[in-house]
Image (cartoon, rainbow, N blue to C red; front, side, top):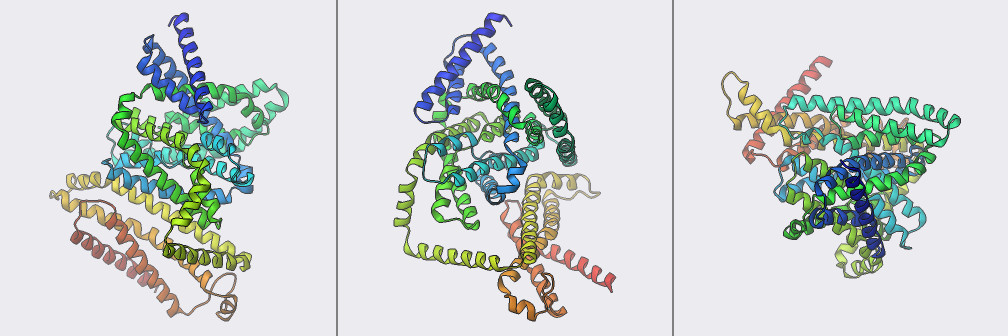
Length: 576
């Protein structure tokens, strides 16, 4: 490439991106919109060296993606997270899985297949840290601590989306992979991430501290950037996106004493190359595709807004926050995040999303960023209107729920440390059992056709696809049982904590947080847990779309219960 071509393209990219961002900032909108518009202008209305422009932007956008993810990782300060992150983690633990599940359901309603629906749920599961920060600084309705909590929520959402992106990366390989290949790739990815984080946290912060104490700041920055690109490269070798590797290195580097110096020095470079990343997205968008898909754009935005606002309000309610703060916070988070672009671009490049749907996702993200400042300004009026126009029966029902929540937290305030520790442990176990249930069910949802085909092709006497699918659903039912049992078992402990007073606990001979009961009572409770676990299992298998009839589901239930009962009987005989 000639020097003149490179210089001309860099001049146009920087000046056009800067002018567009100035224009949108004057309109009190995020600079990101200006960068996207710059790409759209260059792709559709620039008559110069468009091929050279595209290749230059593609290279620089990769640099921008790596640096942007590195800086997002550095924002995740683990020490700060331990001090004030418990509520933010609670919010993300509640709302991200619910949005992901809602996105999968809505994706199927929009006509997407199983993998595409998972990708759609991943795209809409987060908020934009940059956009939310700008909007929060322009308002005075929330306290400084509440704003810090919202920003921390967006950072933890980024972590959750990194995990989701890691999980769906094998599905976006662009090739048909066997089940065992995908499982093997997932195991390699998990092992790589675990080893990289653990080894990195144990060694690299000390190395960077040694360099920072003895060398100039620019050498510290160079070493940190070198490590960032090294991790990004190693990540691609095991099948991860380069974004995930650079994010992990950002988390590791954030633990070094010189992290603030590195973050300060890298920010100008990150801003320039991040602009190139968003321009590269704009280069792939045609204005006519946005116009042609306007209904899909609005549908995606309404899905995102409804799921985001609803799940955040629910999470704040569970966290014992006032309704007004819950509502204002939910509105402040309704801007689709940088990961919407990252995951969308990865899926589009892999051929998992059509050009129209990808354009609609970008359009919905733009709508969310444009609408957020206007919504935030009117948030107080919206709160008042909702309160005044909500039917009285709904208000009364919500007041009763608030009373139940207040009673719960009042009892918890009087509980002993042992009881609270047991409660937190059991709730954590129940939560992760629920997450594993979701993951297992999504895996069966995606791979049941392949499992049925495998059974069909590997039986001595050919089994029909319908019968093989029935076998796969029985495997699904049995695989979920241990998880549903653990979830119900741990939730039943929470119910005991709520219902048993201190006096009744003493009378029952409670010791070290346990309630002493008779063998008959214990057996009765355990029987109820099994019944409820089987019922939940059956409902999950029934509700998730599949090709089995209602009669087939009842057969799955009968066979599954028979297998579980037989296994329990064998265990009982062996114990005797």
